[in-house]
Length: 316
Image (cartoon, rainbow, N blue to C red; front, side, top):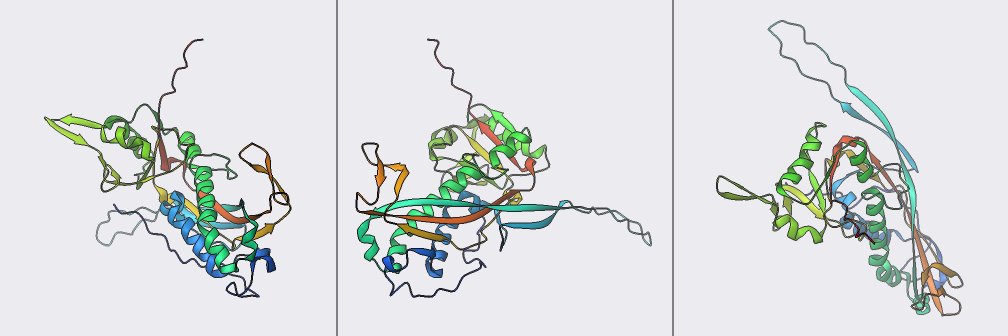
């Protein structure tokens, strides 16, 4: 199964710019909306690297909230005899509301950046902004870490009772898939991490004298299903998530905004000696970038998890 491709050029609400980023210097435009070209490039970087955005379904948004409907249960078909009246069945049609929350990043840089052209500045900042955004979004939406949303893949699996505890083994991987099957779902993707590679290679079973393996590292699949690796220290080694990611929706309603400060003291970023960074004293500037992003899981039974056993602490 190949990984779903998401549209890289999204139909977002772009705002008209009053200047050309190729001519204006950073110190002449210290706040506003990131110019269209660089806004789209940053969003492309976010979408290409975020595991939620790679696997989930994009919902176009133009406001902080969006209501949309979906079939929770579709109409059925019937066998009929000739001239017999066709029966009709009632479909369950539900309306849900997806809400966007603001995500922000602060990046301190040398004061010399003020004399960059806007185009050069955002080209230099682009990978740093994108990485901060997609890592934070994935940790919230998958792991439920610092999560402003009411849902996450972690919460969804727990709520559905679809958690298997144990090591990464052949049988436990199948047990995770069985949890999804119990909810009439089939996984279309797995989420793992690079530290699981050895355990996945060793998750084998001998049947009729033949050693069977579920993991194909070359094709990046588990049991033939697309597998992506989440880079996060908050995801414990030995953890796997499986799910039908067609039931995970996300949206980005607005352009990315920014503001540059020369005088703030940064409380959440420190120097090597542990002291807070003071931009004025250290001749630095800080870029604050914010974006709004929404997330919605429309069926809890769509996700399951394999979690390692808790390590017993030695008796003191």
